[in-house]
Amino acid sequence: MTQVSESDVLGVGLVGTSFMGRVHTQAWTLAPRAFDLALTPRVVAVAGQNPERTAAFAARHDIARASSDWRDLLDDPHVDVIDICVPGDLHAGIAEAALAAGKHVLCEKPLSNSLAEAESMVAAARSAREHGIQSMVGYSYRFVPALAHARELVRTGRLGKIRHVRAQYLQDWIVAEDFPLVWRLDRERAGSGALGDLGAHIVDAATFVTGHRLIGVSALTETFVTERPLPAESGALAATAGTGRGPVTVDDAAVFIGRTDGGALATFEATRFASGRKNAMRLEVNGSLGSISFDFENPNELWFHDHTVDESEAGFRRIHVTEPSHPFAGAWWPAGHGLGYDHAFVHEVVEFTRAIADRRTPDPSFEDGLAVQRVLDAVERSAAGQARWVPLDPRESDL
Ligand code: SOE
Image (cartoon, rainbow, N blue to C red; front, side, top):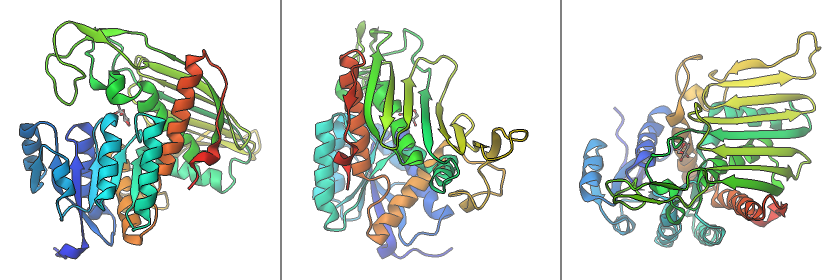
């Protein structure tokens, strides 16, 4: 086995040990095994709220140091990157402190809980960038090979002029009215509900694939179940622990329409109440020369309709996006064997590691995170005014 020189190691300090903490740890571990990288990432420290759980996490994942205070990671000379995998209310504080301490920052989506925080994070990212310190927001669906391939089809003109963007993110994990009041249902912690958790992904993915940005939105949001049982235990998953019920302070669903700067009409739907839909992150784009259609419940498939083909033979055909020529796919298994949810995160940290080594701004940057945040903010303002049209200036988030 080749020995990695310590100077080539990119030390990662992980903040958060729940779902995203686990996915990111796996991504950092697999990245250098599947991809050639000038720097070799290694998770060297982890911070989590609960000392026992954090120690157990460190032991399971072979991480040298565990702490119950993320600030310890900023003082650790072996930590080069702070990877933020905790609820949104903590993003701005950790990211800004880490950038000020000279650490590169990968921050889970959405970038923040408010537009003001996102703006302040971008200001911090810009001054850190002048010293070669990079920052990235974790819009992982950009790194799904099928969506990266869809972007290529749009970029190379195969869809022609884009007319429609149709995006949905459908889940059903809180359909049951007695599902507990977890932190994602608490505005203080999560910022918003389905909108920030799921809507943020489809806004980013639509921008990524089409290159269009929204110039205005009209939205409705709804909270179908306004009170839920408090969870028995406090901890990462709970909003407030106790007995009885507490108020749900976020949206359960958000629907909105928009216009893009490329002249397309767009529709978006984000909900946790689509019974039967588990992780249906869907995107369809219709253009003058063709269309693409994607559903994450079949993550390796991209459907493509070539409208230039004679109509007697035209129609959507399935591209199995597992060929070595497809984005990221060549690093993995032989064609047809397929990738899953976790692989997108591997590709995400590969992009971040390469950007750090090349001293360039990664994609998606904090500015991309801010662009999404502007849309989320406009959606909330529009919904507060019962679908009032709220204009957006996409240039406000430009690098
Ligand atoms: C929960 O709704 C969730 O895990 C999101 O937070 C993720 O961003 C999404 O990829 C899957 O669903």
